[in-house]
Image (spheres, rainbow, N blue to C red):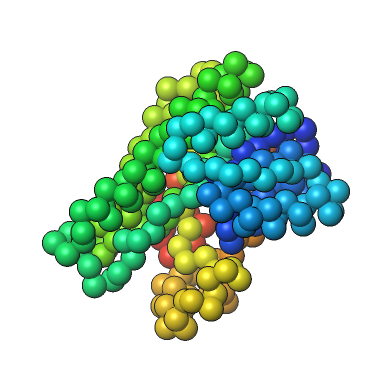
Length: 255
């Protein structure tokens, strides 16, 4: 099997069910992985599994919405592995999830925190890694978004707005820094089940997601996002940039 990330160092901002899946796949593809999260113990679970399998990975405390914290994580990549080739920004604040709440009912403090973490956080992460990648001669940035970023919905207005903002950021980076060897893309999943949330998701929600997708056999898994992320971070994806790629079983179909 070809290790498509061999020799690359990838920073993943945001652990958990999806983030840990990303870390394991990227390490399996040969990457040096730095996985950060506010709760470093969650990141450490993935790192332990990776190192036990012979991979190179470290965990760190990381608040992606705090400039000093993300700068420290970038420095950790450079100090430990001597380089930074890829960033996968994967964290999100998701308190805006009540399907009964719209713009008139949503507390302003939830709106503000959603934008601070999801939109401003991705912005700060991007500012932190770009100078390092440009100096290195190039790099790849992947953002985890959501189908909510492009879907009209009667709920999740703050969350959807934050994800749409991330799409605009990604396109700006791709357009402005492409000549410097920087690629930027967004992965947009629909419902993605993993062990950390499976018991919390009502069966009717899972069935709704399955019914909405063109692929009916199952709903999304972290492995689906990780497979696409590995391609986008690798040289095999060297001519892909500026794209929002839906990993949702055909729930959405854009021209």
